Amino acid sequence: MRDTILGMSSLWVATAILIATYVVIMTERLNRAIVAGVGACLMIATGVIDQDAAIRGVDFNTIMLLAGMMIIVGVSRRSGMFQYVAIWTAKRARGYPAGILFGLGIATALMSALLDNVTTVLLVVPVTLAIARELRVPAHPFLFAEILASNIGGTATLIGDPPNILIGSAVDLSFNQFLINQGPVVLVILVATAGLVHLRWGRRLATDETHRRRILMMEEGEAITDPVLLRQSLLVLAGVVVAFALARETGVEPGTIAMFGAAVLVLLDNWAHPAHKQSERVHQAFGDVEWITLFFFIGLFVVVAGVEHAGLLRILGEQLTTATHGNLVRMVSVVLWGSAVLSAIVDNIPFVATMIPLIIGLAPAMGGERAIEPLWWALSLGACLGGNGTLVGASANLTAAGLAERGGAPIGFWAYLRAALPLTLLSILIAQVYLIWRYL
Image (cartoon, rainbow, N blue to C red):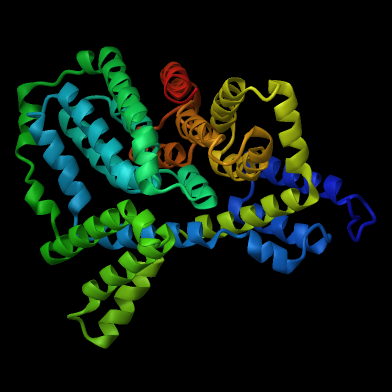
């Protein structure tokens, strides 16, 4: 165990930097991209890890996948397709609040499986607030249902939730593997959650005929502001999803697929415009990329590479193996419930980024990479579903809360906790039964 330039053990320095980074992120006093960047620089500056190793620690497949999907969604959003879906769903429910509550929840889950859940709530919540105002009903049941559905739906696929992107990229799990292994339990959890949401709120929501007709008079077609872009966006999105499904056979990484899809969509969007307009539209497309999130990931990858290089994760892995006596059932339970509890308290992204190399290190003692595959599904289910537990558990929750506050329907921390925690615990229990039944 080598020393750092401070003359201290690299293990202790790396651990101190990791803990300090997590604590400051939790306080939310500084933007998390700044915190992760400072933590990464400290890992290099103190000698825990050199710059070449730090660069190797960054998973550029994940960065490319996130950036590509952000561009695709940002360009597609300008067509109005997502507003169309929300209004169409409300009208199919004939303007009845209970039906809209169910329909918007299901639509949110489906969109979150194909987009990331933060983007989904950004698109759905503003329309939901408008529908609730038209119906003269409280917005909170709809918002709670959509937050829960976004995290549940995002659990089903490789691209639906950032923790899945991290896991899939790190251990080469494909889009199809996520869908096949997590899709069934996500469907069960979604149905159970939708049923309980209806029992708690849906059956008590009511509006009069006048306000219901206002919803029926909305024209979803008016939400489409650019029909040509709509067709182009649907074509590219379909192509990207098919390419994800065939990635294992073609050998093309998800990051390349997402970036290629983004490039094609930007090309189609600019094809018929003069050069000066193209520059403006390309700037807008790249402006839709959440650069703060990308640089947060880059800094976090370096911090985790530092603690892995220093040997901390190896020690923690040995402790986990000892505590569970190498029993896979116990280990899956610890990872699932531990991930759920911690993801409800802190943002699930840094937690998952730290857990990935720890679980990889368990493979030799557990019988190889294939033997520990249930641990990846436990980590994904725990982190994604656990994020529903509190208002700060996932980025989608905080995004929805911010939009709700600006829309005049603020969501309180304790009000959300009372509503969401029981449903979250039920979802984790269902996941536990599923993991044991299918894999152990």
